[in-house]
Image (cartoon, rainbow, N blue to C red):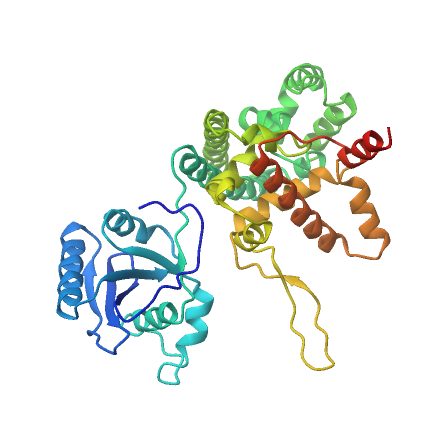
Length: 419
């Protein structure tokens, strides 16, 4: 059983059994129903093989007793807790589907006219959504695309962890050497991290002397750090107002954080090397990489989120997956503003947004188009979202046709026709 892209599940008839699941960390709740009104009371089963076997035996029994032919098993789009059960069921004779949590939340109040949320109520609501035909098949990347999804997610977690540690480090540095942050706006640079690791206190910097400090930092920064900046940090150390009480404990934590940040940087580098390795195994990856301003990290993340670009038929399907499809709320004489739905993959939107920032730079491929949007009075954020949509359309076309990007293609094409 292989799924490459989401599709609406419309084949729900009198011979179809609906099994709805409310996913939990330790235990899941299951509920069975057919369209004739026969159902069973929601029951729990634990998140290990014995519990899965119990669920499967009950499912087969209900299907046999009601003389049903097809089985649709559905659950809300959720985190990792559903994955073991999904892999247990994917080779069974069933159709696995997911529903949007927004749909179940809105339908929940119709059940008993109450916003009440319980493990026993939730699977019934999920079954209602499936019965209405609003369920989608699962997106399951396979092979290199699956590896890229996991690598991208790991990189996102590592970056969040590193950012948190850098913020903690800034707080501690401010206590013992507040002037340091006035000279080094970004403490994650090589020069700043060298000082934090080797000379974190003002006294330590003063003790090595300005000449020795200049030679060392110029070498560490590969001569990018100016002598004026080095002199500024030395003079700041001489008249620092950092505290002395409890300094040893603070220095211990600073050393710990600096070491962890270095380890996190090495881990992120390893992840990015693995991304390059698996990108080489995707036939159309070089087509997307031919776009100036779109790098391997963006391409790896997009392929991981999409699974396989070639399985999508239209750009509108791709827009919906990314949550970049447009909608408006209008009624009578009121005409609402058009906005993106944001009901797709948030990481996809994030990757496209940062790629859009690259392609609208002064020598970027969409710089002129972006400037035209700004001249028409469009806000910068809205213009970047519009560029994200156009960029996704371009990426989709290149991946679909397996062709390379040609800058100013339309102008070249018109010149050829004129000749």
